[in-house]
Length: 344
Ligand SMILES: [Zn+2]
Image 1 (cartoon, rainbow, N blue to C red):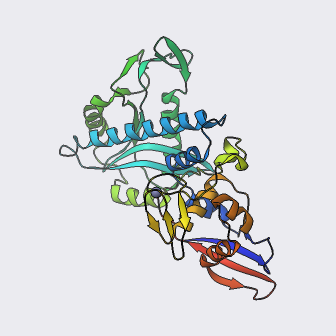
Image 2 (image 1 turned 135 degrees about the horizontal axis):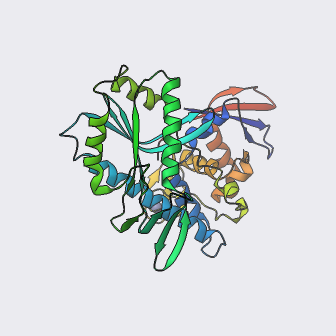
Image 3 (image 1 turned 180 degrees about the vertical axis):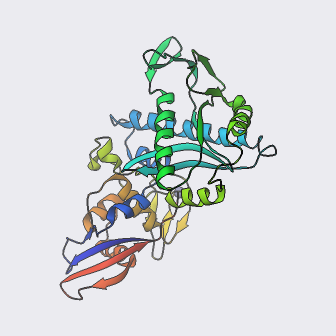
């Protein structure tokens, strides 16, 4: 449940949703996940826009990453009959305001395993001396962020997080190269870098190598604490992040069903002119989308411009319909607006 403060100055154009205290938390909860944010931004960018190719590439990489993570989680199912553990995918935590995101955690009674998945194809080469990681594909060599560094950083931060929450749980980790089209060269000696097929053996080996039972070995307690602390990364303010002027975005209301800007307002609902999808509460999704793109205050006028709405009254009623509490009855009317967040 999220709160916004709408300040309405007596029917003027300055209807503004202001940020109440705690706005940053609300903002985090409102953000789309990375893929959904990129999809929507791409739909709103004209094809010839200079940033179209950049966002398309970002979306492609994010989708490939998620596919790789799914393959990893599926692979872990092969081990389930042989050992008792819980798998948590996409865990995001914070230590000293440093957020870190882990692809996959395996929680057993005696240890926790961190598996970072990378869905990269080509000839992948690690240089232990320089720490460089390169991919060669079709004769083109590209220097990429070294996944070993990412694993080590996340292991260090996870260790710190566990210590601060009084979990004496030994941890270990591995980088999992999930693409069947990856050829690993010069795999480092000081870190486990494995292919997807090696996951079952490696996990069993690591579980066996951990102490029989840790002093704090209560995977349920750890699992509950991790789930409570798990948080979405902020994937919003995409326009600012990619230096895209908000005015460059195509106008309209987005249809989550056919992924086009074809939704129109009829008397009682929002209805897609292309696929017929109807949803009386689609304005919540549309406000959610606005926040994903920019942190510019949402005014009645901006809302109408963004959605391509002509009626100021409809925009006003939409804003009002999201409010649950009024403050100041007369000139400076204010509303607390609550939006039920839905994970997308
Ligand atoms: Zn549609």
